[in-house]
Amino acid sequence: MSLDELVLHLQHVVDRLVRRVRLGPPPQSGRRRVLIVQFDGVSRSVLEQALANERTPFLKQLLGQHDYRMQPMSAGLPTSTPAFQMAMMYGIQPDIPGFHYHDKRRRKDIHFPRAGHAASVEEEQARGRPGIVTNGSTYGCVFTGGALNSLFTFTMLKRPTGAGLLRALSAFVVLAWVIVKSMVLTAAELVRALLRFLADPAGERARGWRWFAIKIGTSVWVRELFTLAVSRDLYAGVPVIYVNYFDYDLFAHAYGPRHRRAFRALHRLDYSLEQLWRVLRRVPEHRYDLYLLSDHGQVDSTPYQRLSGGKPFERLFFEQFFPSLAPRQAGPAHPQRRGLASGIKAIRHDLEPGVFQRFVNYLEQGFPWALGELPEAREDHGVRVVSGGPYAFVYFLDSEQPLTLTQIDERSPGLADEISRSRGIGCVLTRTDDGPICLWRGKAYRLSDDEPGPFAGREDRALVLQGIRDLMAMPCAGDLVIYGNDSADGNVSYIPESGAHGGPSSEEMQTFIVHPPGVNLPSPIIHPTQLYPHFLAYQEP
Ligand SMILES: [Zn+2]
Image (cartoon, rainbow, N blue to C red):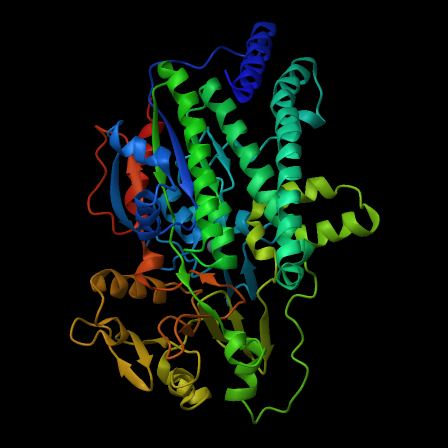
């Protein structure tokens, strides 16, 4: 028996005691339950490479000895976690064009890591539809999917009633163990970081302590916390559990999707999956079905600032395309930077109280990967530019509705065309009365089968073209949608990162779902909305 198991066993004993004191009956047996594990940001081709190179030995065993099946899945557009999860959890085609965008009607930016943004988007767009995680738990997800428990309920620690206290104790056993174990692993990481620093002082210093703190936080503490919390839920028979591990995504953004550090992160996730599997085997009476999926992939990318002499896209945009505008300070769009970055600063400088709670809130709202450099938006003379990855949005704020190309040309003649010919630009999408068109190196394409433009060589062409139609039907997608994919300078991201997603490359769009033998999923899966009825069925008794 491993130490983890011993701790969980102890926790189980406390749990039984709690139930005896009277906290409700044991979980009803008989119904099928579901555990959904998401490996954020892993494309199908990266997973295949990992399997071939023995980086995910447990998954290989699952697919071999245990007869699990891997089915290809297309994430649709945009290739972004919130869009994927909204579609899968609620079965709707969401109005979520990216991780960071502007809502013209509400006159505000949505950036998912910011407090409250995910909650308000979920409430507005789900509109009371039942989510697939109703009565369950979510960990690390953007939305709750109707879960009772997201992340880890700390309210039980705040309201200490008699029975609640016992339950808190039960949770505390898990929490205490996570802390002890994570401390040891953190110490190991510190030693490794020191060795790396000695080998390459300049490179490691450039990344800085903040990156290091985030890395330790996600790759050790959060993963351990999620794995043990999910294990605890499995023992307790929670009907639906959705856990999103985002370590791989974080490392792939920083180093590139096929960098050895990204693969190492994937290897650690494979180990977490194995731990969960062992717990599942111990509670066959709960009849869990285990699924593993990914929400999108990543593509190797060149940061735009490397092409522009260090200037961010949203700034160069105004200098290059609106040179006639009187130069004036287009201030940063969001003076208040919130989240973990400021939280850590606070710890560093004056140990601000409540910082731990802010860390927790932060994780509930979004993801730490955005912590390095928060993507900026700029606004001048009624035009707003938001850079979010290998995509950037341009909004004309004088109209609440999305504009057509004709309307944009009235305001700024030839703008879309000029952007499409510029350095570091893949293509520009815009709307017309007859559907979206794509401007690619100064030429316009209808994006039909006869005029696929930049997507001509794609095997999954029909999926990209449909994805673009879906995206441009979203009111919140920019009046112009700029893609950095396949520019003359390679794949370009408008935020500083070596791996990117949000765009239409097949690496970003093509993912997978692994399911148990005997389960029938829709086939082919060309959009995550198709998963909704399948997982909603687990809600029926
Ligand atoms: Zn990401």
